[in-house]
Image (cartoon, rainbow, N blue to C red; front, side, top):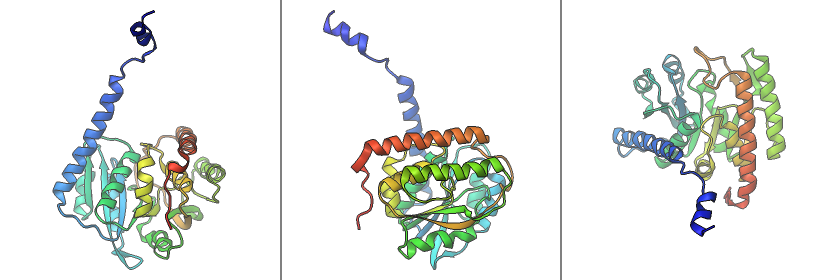
Length: 286
């Protein structure tokens, strides 16, 4: 068989669909970023930026923004809302309450919205970045608890814990899942953590700058962040907080079984990737 024919037998099909999807995703991200920079030219963000990804949260976002403190640990704070597509008026609500607002033209997933928000926050001068949900499950008044250990140099990354604090929800299956996956991530990371699936978190800006090139997941990305940060050697802390039921509507993460399966998949994929990466995860330089 001629070399050219052998090459044809062994060559994979040209995956144009995959390339088109990747190009369209990048186009959506670039479009959102460009519109944000045009809306907020020469933007200098305050030391603390609270990032809120929001998809179809018109009914809930206003109450979350209305509860925002004026300062956190004595530092000015501002909300940065990334509207992850959707056809409602979430963006109008965000602007009405004075939040810096970046709008993706299509839904890309919470993880993609977070990565864009991290990049914007770091690029515009934030020293500390807090993440919280747009559905009312996290209390913005408790932000001091998360940022405090960072300001005092006791931790680099802090996760809110409903296990250490108060959980007002009644879903026993979800509660059991929180405990199960916290134990599993404890084995994977070698850290004692009680609530690894909580989206209420606070980071030093340099931690996010280190993690950002290694983050891949578009959904169920809380485990990815924890595993990647632990593999890089950053100090991870927890603090007790209150976990509320959604103010209205339904979770975008799917039912309990689906959510649990996807969360387990992200743990496995991320753990394998960090093992392969080894020392390429830069981590802290102290």
